Length: 208
Image 1: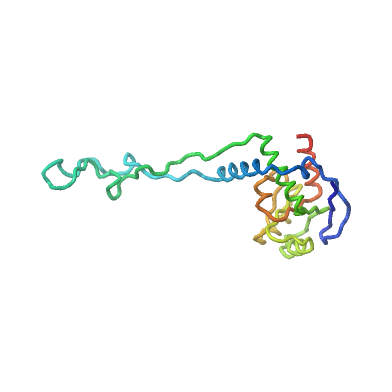
Image 2: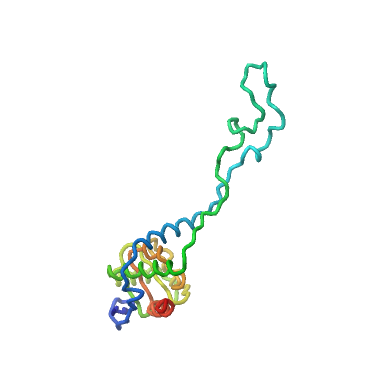
């Protein structure tokens, strides 16, 4: 399939042949849903922690004798029903991480890219660079490309000036092409690739 390659003014420069195996497959919605569930689970820190009755201070002796006071029986002030006592069944540090086979992750990435391509939400730039960080420059580029909503810029190399130029735009994020994942693609409205990023992406996943 052919895709236009644009300059930063939004003018067509050339056409690039996109791989059908990456940008033209039928999106697998089951795999995408599974990938999103695993991705979000892996973002959980799992560091919540409360002290049990074995960990709080105090409770060295019985508060009062067992019988004869008219009060309920208690053996320790560390009991969960006491103020400053331990917490019963509270959260403890744990890992929420899940995993997916590599082929499933790759299929999710290809499905997400194909979905964006089918909806005409992918734009390719021949080059994206600026000599100095400039939010105005980045805003003008996005305007020329008619990029609306959340935008993800996929770079072929780490470009500090481009990253800094987009950092003040709340709806714009940048990512290195090797770090691109299906969740980032699904959660954005427009994908902007540099031409070299697309070529490297296709070279990596074409044979897989």
